[in-house]
Length: 220
Ligand SMILES: C[S@@+](CC[C@H](N)C(=O)[O-])C[C@H]1O[C@@H](n2cnc3c(N)ncnc32)[C@H](O)[C@@H]1O
Image (cartoon, rainbow, N blue to C red; front, side):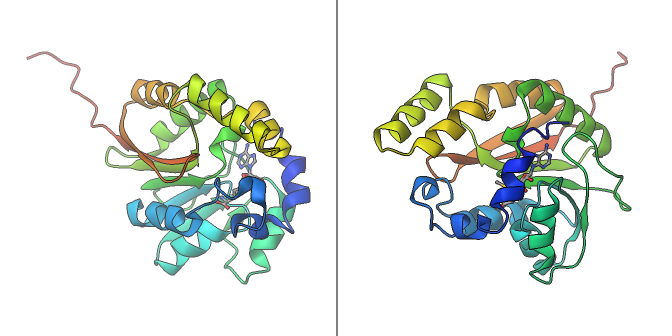
């Protein structure tokens, strides 16, 4: 589910790391500070991490280097192969944000970078509901992704991309499901999370959502 953009990644796998390293002019701002973005996620993570959309394994590698136990979920075989060619331990499993095997450990943090926007807002809601049931009360979600303050900000970036002749970026911003921060806030709040947002470049924000203690429903 939510796998509609998969063929794109099967084709992009061999050159994906060139893009994140700033070699594609259209995506230069999207991936500006990429290493710092991954580092922020690692620093905000606990010890037992479930990662979605691990791609070529860049975040996975940083998590593993920091001594975390990682269970990676990635639907694209080509991306998984590219990750394994780097000599990373095979912590990758077939699956997606909504349907995935159970990790063999108690997950304290769920992470993802540059991937959650592949789900529609309705699917994002389903995903956060699933994660709310997986995490204990002190667990958290740390996602980095392109998102916008509101629809006007989203449209402004599409127009900017078109004016710069960045047609691929403009098309991407128009067709994938980049969320507005207000929508994400609503989804996380409904599922019992309190959250903070941190902007990393013109496109990418990190959202850290902590599961709130469930309030005692009984009145005394
Ligand atoms: C832009 S790449 C990001 C890769 C990596 N996380 C990074 O930061 O470089 C997006 C990744 O999400 C994966 N993806 C696409 N749809 C997905 C889904 N529904 N569930 C999980 N991963 C998905 C793609 O196959 C791809 O590997």
